[in-house]
Length: 410
Image (cartoon, helix red, strand yellow):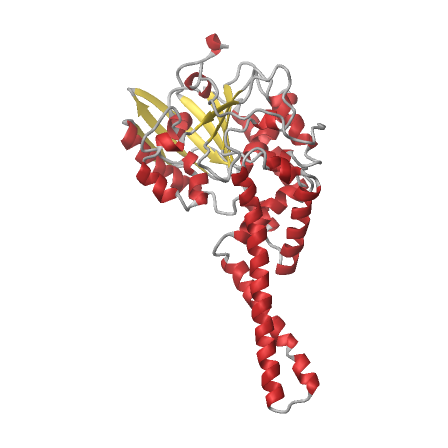
């Protein structure tokens, strides 16, 4: 395979698949602009952001000059924020029903206990919204009860009939509902958002919802179109939940023969993945099949990057192996660590310590003590993903033991 590696990239297409994120795609451009300028200044290369040059929902262009080598890239965000927003448009009662269903999906199937054998951080992150929403419910009911009790006592003191005291339950319920409404709308600790996130994954027992499947077919069409262009590399980047979507749509592309043998290099970069949160569920047969299939393909380079410091991801867990579907001829992914303790200064780590979301997005930002992982050189630099990590061994902390109870594939 080494002799097929092209060491120079002049034109690249990057398609970025976000995780479960309702924010507009322009937020990713702004994150790229800030991080790219910072990383270029730290690492000593030039990076320039330009307008979108290709047809697509949202994107931008970027050019780098690295050691005299000029590379141009077009980056497109594959948008599914509308699906995320629709899945979050539940009322208070429906959200608490989701809570019960999601908790049962993971506890009843035994997935939760097996996930804890891998990494406790993302499991705690999954339990956090359950605990928070239950605490908010208790607080709201308590406040409503106090309000009802106070009003009832006042009514009795005024000599009101007994039935009027019982009628105070209604305003007490209104108080409780108003408190929950405030928590849901403001969501100061992101518990409601996270609850919808985990409920989305668990809603079909690990199977993709129809709307997500349809959007992934559209994404596959966009990548297939890019593979027919005059490019040196097509790089698919999947972050968080977007990682397992990328696996499935690329598996579909290869199975259907839509990856030309004489086309651009095809590469997959998965960042901060949460694959086991889905692949460990009983109905995730499609995802498990896609993981097993993609892990053997010679027509792709697949590098998975995570870091133990990211408590929202299954850091250094080989998503194929831990899901229990690793074939004997597995070749991908190459699992490496972003090594936050080495690549981020103590001051930067301190700033991120209590910001779990920014830590989870650090893969898309600048590192003030960079190692061999540089998101901006990978997406806009002169080397293909294959050549950049050629000969690289998996990180020593890689977890590859099969833990999943459900290993059926479709």
